[in-house]
Amino acid sequence: MAQSDQSKPPAARLARAAPAEAVEPGGTRRSPRFTMEWALPLEPGLPTYVVVFDHAGEHHEWRAVGADEADALAALIGQMSEVGASREAIDFAAAAYHARLPER
Image 1 (cartoon, rainbow, N blue to C red):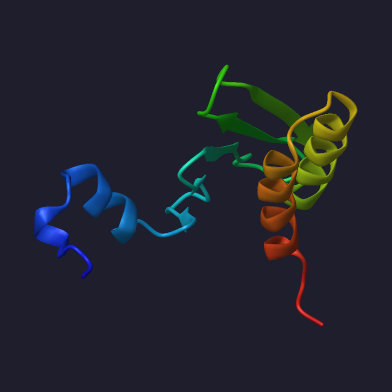
Image 2 (image 1 turned 30 degrees about the vertical axis):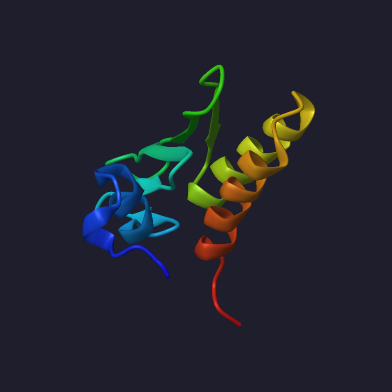
């Protein structure tokens, strides 16, 4: 028989209730392992900055800059690929990139 949620340790209850990925106001994306944060310009023509933090193992981080969100994410994915980031980290950034593409 399966344990009820109340008989499980608190961390197990939280892990079960947590979404796989959440997007917060301001565009911050979180998953159990990764966080993506933005520095968005207040004026047109200024660069957009993005950073991904990997909270597992050695706590890696990757940063990129671009003309807009999609451009910054494309640069981030390219940089992550060049330095040998994990497939999970690249997939996390790619999901954010595809979420910003215009619908067809």
